[in-house]
Image (cartoon, rainbow, N blue to C red):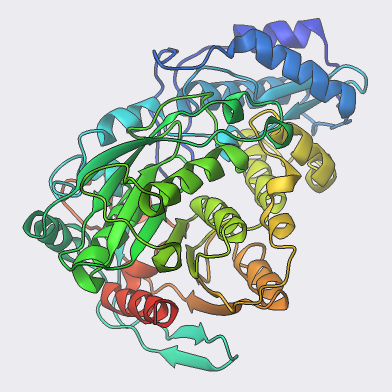
Length: 504
């Protein structure tokens, strides 16, 4: 039955309880992660955007878009259960500053609810747990918060499929799966031995408000934090590491790969926390997938390539010796910046988002199906591309910053791209993202390599005893960004060989 939108439903939404909620998938890697509900608060350095501005934004959205979304049988109970789940998700996972995950459209008498995960930043409890973590101590500090529900794989996995830039397909049998020593103990020990790290800060760049949607953040220059891993060798390339959704630079994926770049391959690394994450400044409490975060990455590239350096320990590097490595949602920013800076010669994307609209629809549909007793009807129609872009404008997304828009020119310099994914990734589907990116970039003249990694069966046990409560059925199953867990040594070899071809 359709639910009439209006004052009664608005009051019901406002009156819903504020504590306790079901866990949500985490975009750093595994899923099945439960976020703890926390009391609403506004960080001291938050910009003054507030609910009033968001209500105005919603009104602007409703003037430009309307939708009739009919809920399944179950009536008011179904609608309220859904609203309750979304409200709690926003309150606990999106830092409580705003809570506009629900749009009511009186003109059509329907209710549109959006997945807060699509725009989520770190949950406050996660950010608090991760702040003490550094490249030197991540093997002993907040291990449960960092590894959460990741579990080990069994050995003897299926061959990895590597498609080279010339179309040649090579299959490689993986070796032993990753252990806690491979991912944390050994890299952290080498970090301490090889000079540790520097925590550096630099301002982001001031952007163009015309292509920043309704977000005020492009007119600001928030302070960005980054971990700098200095190579023990002089005059080495530098990799800029960009983390995924709801995480930070010290997420196990980013910190392990950053450590390998420095300790195993010999490169410098600048692993940044995007605005609203980790040690970087809080702005509006959401991730836009557009200009705001791309500006942070461009500022990181400038920190390395433009003198004077943003920190005495940072080794200045020519643009043609800087590479980008994007993880998951960080792949979106990596694509954007690679398109904008033609002197960058290499891009490595690990399970990255290429098409925001498709990922938005995929995430929203998944969340709606979890929160309602029955799947909401006609979701593909409800979350139309037009509506997705309109909603994205609230947080700063604009189609002008879509990778497909930015890569409009044919590449004349044969720049190199490496796209890696698990074949069964259920968080960022390879068909919607990696395959689409590979086809499009090849058509524009880029030298694209792809790596497809089938998952071996789970060993059913966590990497560390510190991952309390994780075993068997509680192991994560999204297979997102987990290629390195199948065989870390082989993954490092692919990283090494790709960048060797870039920085020849």
